[in-house]
Length: 312
Ligand code: COA
Ligand code: ZN
Image 1 (cartoon, rainbow, N blue to C red):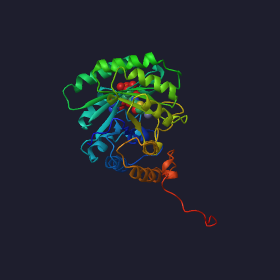
Image 2: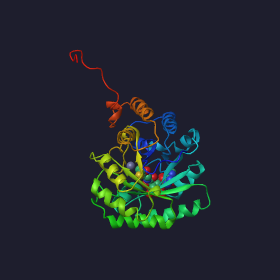
Image 3: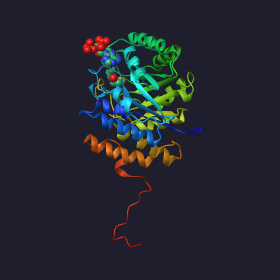
Image 4: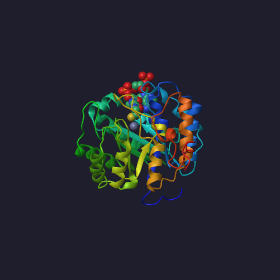
């Protein structure tokens, strides 16, 4: 992989996991693999491929093993698996995931709704995972879901989120993600939490995961970027959402984010036209409109012919 410039913004694709998990109609395994392979070709450095969770909790991703086995892995791209517990980590290791993404919520209520266990039980499971992967050639990231607000409990204190991040780091994880599961974050809150989190971890090890549920997704990205963050999750077409969080809607849209960066002169290393083409194809495959905007509007430089009556 080409090293990216210090001002580069790393977009990490999560549609195959966060996007598909909430789709109402079955997405065939073949289609999942096509999307992931298209993302690899478009230049993503990190793709969240699937999750190794209970097939009863998320039936859509019950084919995670087959998807991992059949994708074409591009050298330099990290293929990530979300895992909730030791059982999931063992499945992910067997499937040769490059990185495990362990997830727990800042709020006890959302963790009970999503993972069916207390946060202490989640953390005990994560300790068991770290022990099980010791020495294995796999990275481990840990996510704090509902870090900017919980649909059941409301506001989450920054101190509490930072304490969870510290406990993750004490376990020896290589990366931390702060996730705004239901789009409750605002740009000033984001800037403040990012600044404080960067006192614990360097920017190369911190990911921000925003949903656009209240229309603040890209504003939050910019606030986080200006505060020093460089890694962001996003989903093609703006797909996504947690089925166990009421009112959840899509992630920030990958092609909209890449377009914003391109217009602002922030390098991403991604092929924007390829993303737009894939997003349009995905809308056809899923059979419904996607929330992303650039795939509908086109790029600024895609100019239109002037009307006949404009003669000058
Ligand atoms: N992979 C596959 N199956 C698993 C599993 C895993 N990682 N962990 C548990 N299971 C199975 C058990 O074997 C059991 O199967 P059975 O009913 O056929 O005997 C069943 O799931 C329930 O197991 P249990 O340990 O009692 O789990 P639970 O019902 O308390 O649920 C989780 C715990 C974590 C497995 C479940 O809540 C889950 O998968 N949540 C993930 C939700 C998610 O992905 N949300 C969106 C992303 S943030
Ligand atoms: Zn999400």
